[in-house]
Amino acid sequence: MYQVTEGKKYLVPDTLIRILAYTIDILVIWSIKHIAIIPLINMLKLDSVRVIFDTFSIATIASAVLYFVYFFFLTYFFGQTFGKTIFGLKVMSQKGNKLTLSQVFFREVVGRIISKQLFNLPYLMILFNEKRIGLHDYIGDTFVVNEKSYSYNEINTGNYESHNHPEQMEVEPDYGKHNF
View 1 (cartoon, rainbow, N blue to C red):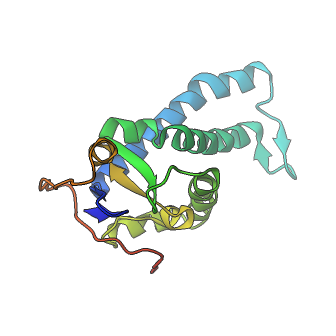
View 2 (view 1 turned 45 degrees about the vertical axis):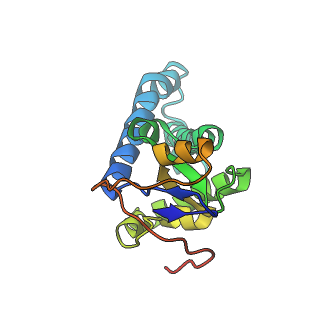
């Protein structure tokens, strides 16, 4: 259980569920890329065009833009991507407030760029801390919760009692202490 504000407690999802949600998101991005972007680039005959010191192709840049736009806008407007929706996960602010534009930017753009540059190894942080917070969560001051506990808290006064789910872990709050 992760307590954000007095009386509000949230279930932290299992690491495997987060990995599966991310995998679905990557499959959605891959599908959009191969159904819409690559055919459009080929149709416009831009497939051989290179930009930025002749290093990157238009397809590579379009794929990167799609990746960041997908995660940024879905997280900002809905608090979840398609993968998170399927598994009932939601991204929340560490303080329990609505996600701000800067939080989403730092989580989904800055955090993911840093993680990609480090060969996705920072995502493994989720395995080694009890709140299952990755580097991108630390950077964005966010965390991922089970949506059912989030919805319940929005309706209820906050007296949420946990049902022991083997795939979920209870954790205590730890405001402002980011131990890497």
